[in-house]
Length: 349
Image (cartoon, rainbow, N blue to C red):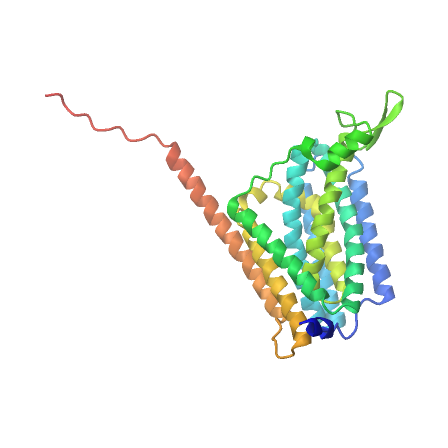
């Protein structure tokens, strides 16, 4: 087994499509889009549904068109890997939004400030994903067992997500019990009220943090957890660091607007956790098989195109079953609310 661990060297892509010019252009484009988002949130406001849908469509159109260009420029294999990775990352980002909704509600963030908090979360996530992607690429190049490690991480995460989904775990958060909040309050004064988009204010002659700063710290903490899951997941689709970065970046950039579109709909996707658990488990198995194929060539691998079909299929099934479950719940609620038929009167003898 130790020999297999050291000898299994999965073959990386023949050549990364990420030339220095393409890397620079992509990073510049992502930075420009982030600046646009910052300018949009500079004036605090609660976006209308029309505004949120418009920006969401914009941030989905960009990666879709970019994927078409990659397909045309570099070939079908890279195009399929890109689209598959993007769908995986977008699915996981929707799960991220669910946690963001819980945090923003727990901290009672005013609706007009939520865009700024989400933007802080996106910025932190972009930086952390960049670090994790670089580390992942270095590990893959240096250690044969990296794919096995990534597969184990995803399988363990899949079990946790699946258990939470089956047990209907209460995800409510007591802000005062968060370790990060308690630590910050011990070492620095915090105001009781928000002060617009300011993270600090001067109070009683000293600088104090606002609750917005506490939310930002909590959001950045969740970014670390999400990065540990997301980066191995997309490395299970493609070994090209450029495609890993591009899919992560494009999936994250639209979260600010997507939050306001899906805020109410997420509660209806009651089986989303089950679907994400299956997707993570599937990619985990794919990574383990990929590692095993390097040690024992007879072990089969899962093609990327098949992965794309399985992932889309799982998402479609859980969406349909979620809608069906909601319809049944609504019907049961209506029946429960109907007055019972009066018992027929029996004449007295």
